[in-house]
Length: 381
Ligand code: HEM
Image (cartoon, rainbow, N blue to C red; front, side, top):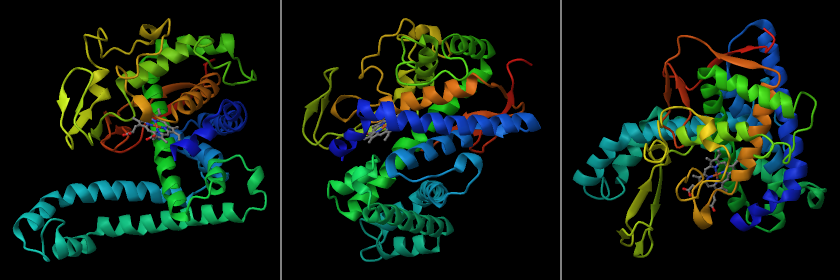
């Protein structure tokens, strides 16, 4: 999968397909926000970013047009959220019962996997039923996308990832799994990065103003956004804001691995075969020995920029399985940030208690709900 997918992350594709899609989708989002500004309405910026990343990957990965950023419903995105939320909540609700079934009931009523008791428990759980219904929709939608692509007479000319997979002769089942995998990899992570970045900008208005002035100097409205114009050397402060956000709010804050063979990690600790090892970029990014005053949001600490060693800053993982979409995510986040900030200023809606979510990818919760509300302002006001 990694080998085929890596073809979409070629430089040529960054300069054409991705550039084209990110700019178009960022402009759509900016117009939507300007409309909200005109009406004086608050906006849930986090859901805007989830829509922006979703619409972008639907085109880049699947060649499918989706316009959730302007309120067009999309079955796939909705079902994906329902499946994810209900799966997590059902697992939390069920832990004690599953342990009871597997520890105290004999097979086939209980036993290692919970046996019949677990099946009955799941059938009667409304959350489990909602999750199943949502995964059915996901399955149908993935099947539809794959079939549509297989039937496309212009398959050979298509540049999206799904077309690459189908031409590489993977089975429909494998490609369906891939569709799901790429949606979680490509939508939620970058949307979390953008949400926390704008959260920090609303909390640090001086930083927002400084970033705006860098953007207006180098890329005022109507100047083209591309890989070169958005590079760290052209926009060092923007790059600093992004890395500072990733340090404090890594979209994957905690990750686990398992050693298949006896191993030794770089610090010299032995890891026996089948042992699980977890690492926690969230804590690593807040280590005072490495980052003085770690709680302070200070983009300047990344200037002049040298990319941090992968294993010291494993926000995108490290080594041979490092995130395949790292450059794409940074390019996407920069495109959106520049397009929005050259036209709009953002202020937090007062009265929100902000915490972080507890999903695989760390989003924002405002007063216990997965949202982040802002007012969109203009720079002139
Ligand atoms: C800020 C954004 C992102 C962050 C922080 C991030 C982080 C990560 C992390 C931590 C992993 C390792 C997961 C593990 O092995 O346990 C990973 C893997 C991966 N990511 Fe990302 N990711 C981001 C954006 C993206 C995007 C936009 C894509 C686009 C497709 C993507 C595609 C992938 C893929 C395919 C893998 C699996 C690589 C492999 O196992 O060989 N990621 N990412």
